[in-house]
Image (cartoon, rainbow, N blue to C red; front, side, top):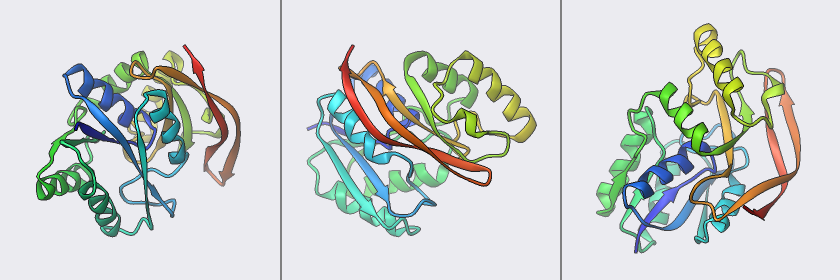
Length: 222
């Protein structure tokens, strides 16, 4: 047995797994909850299906759980999935969201599973700098004032981190985007045995927000 990583494919999921592995935690599976509505209360929407490719990059089995994204009901869908798995515990990428942290912890307590959140209560600015130094992160969604279409498809680098300082100061953008300000997809990480190459994508944009829809991606040798 081992832990299951709750993963949307974004930086917090992947980096929390990296930190847990550094602490000696072993993983047996990746689980992705895919909402059928864009405004899910708990789970990320853009490109969540590509978390399966990350699991393949780590040689780990992957499981999708589909939910309507209805408040609280989506937690029951997650609970049903966890109850059917032979695991020791659950790892989540929660940073400061008590809504997410408390509910996952309650599910684990109810199922007698250990719950770990290696990023919990970390300083957001320090965290995004740390994650960017370890992961190769692509911005795949922008939903806040001050974040433009030009960011979609961009890799998080020193220039973007400097831009975040300005966006945080001017518009209150959360450094890690946990309030839904922006979404990410990780194409390489220390635990990946292969990296991910995005071959084809398109921008979906409406008024002041949008996302990068990944339509084709493949694994490459490092």
